[in-house]
Image (cartoon, rainbow, N blue to C red; front, side, top):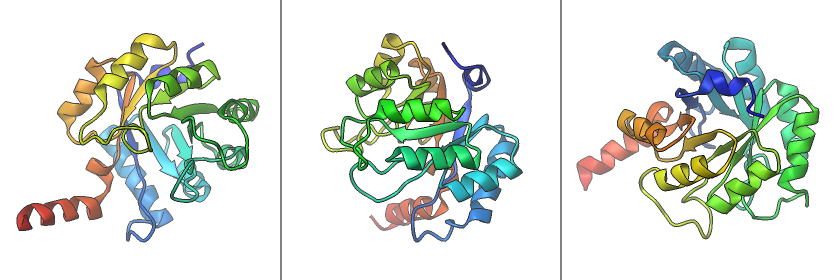
Length: 224
């Protein structure tokens, strides 16, 4: 059954308001202000990292919050365990985003067990996948949304410089849950193309919320 939240997100933009370790923007108040700016610009929801930031965002912004918890920098590190997932629910996340690739999870659990725990706690799950089979399996295990977040970013997934619209289209045609396009969407035109390919919603991060990365790209362009 499609969750009611899906209606509010259909055809709309979700803004990923995150900053990597060491970035000057990685400060809770700064990230919350980023979500407020996304709200002012018309975003339908925000995607934020870390329970502390989730809780602060929930308190400040009247938008659905997709929470994740990045712990580590290799293997499964996007909400890698049931403990991480439940901490996000406790912080107020309406949706928990978690790695749903075929790689082993550090606590030995399965993605299905994470879904069950989050559902029992009263929240929804967004499965971050890198390939078609992973998306289909995540939907079968109860994910409420499936995102193409990890396409091109994990071993075995071909490196890409543009959104994986083929994966979006294949999943949208094959699974009964909403497909969320995410990853390397750099322009409004690409966001529209993702919807045309079958995406239910579109997540944009770096192109909107990453001044350090954007500055670096401009500098590289001037010196190349």
